[in-house]
Length: 201
Image (cartoon, rainbow, N blue to C red; front, top):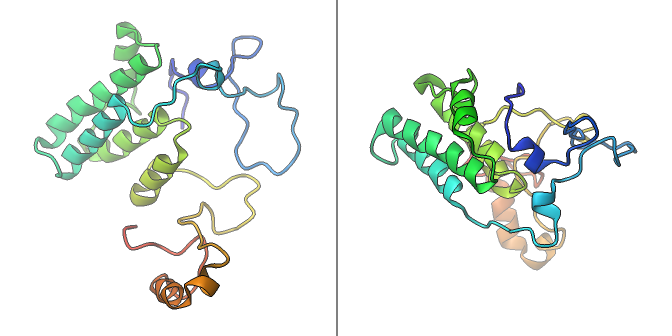
């Protein structure tokens, strides 16, 4: 993804010398000097009194935007656009960075400006940005939509890429053999992290 001058970035990550936020590429298997070289998680999330949001307003608005876009809620693209823009605004407000001028500029950027032909991708991608540290829902959104477009980790240990499911516990076959065998058969006969579950496209 191209940089989008997102004011949430210094909330999400520690600001280093020079006023930069530098992320460590994910999935690295080599030792790296993280202190002062890469940003830690931002204080908003790691301070002693940091809030823990389980379900929030912006999240709901992104869900409604997607629902309108794909026909689960009335209004189509017109409603999706309103929910989408309101979701981004709510996200900025949640993280204490809302500024009307910057918000208007952000919405006008080519990757953010809502276009019906790419609306679903834009909604899920912006939701992914908002859902920082909520890896489970973000992973589920990616698995079912393919958005945002992600690439495997640089040091991925499996050439098949990003996992599509969690494998069963190692003792499942011994404790629940019949049902385990039936479930694995539905996954194509192999219990691994890449069998597609029934709800995946």
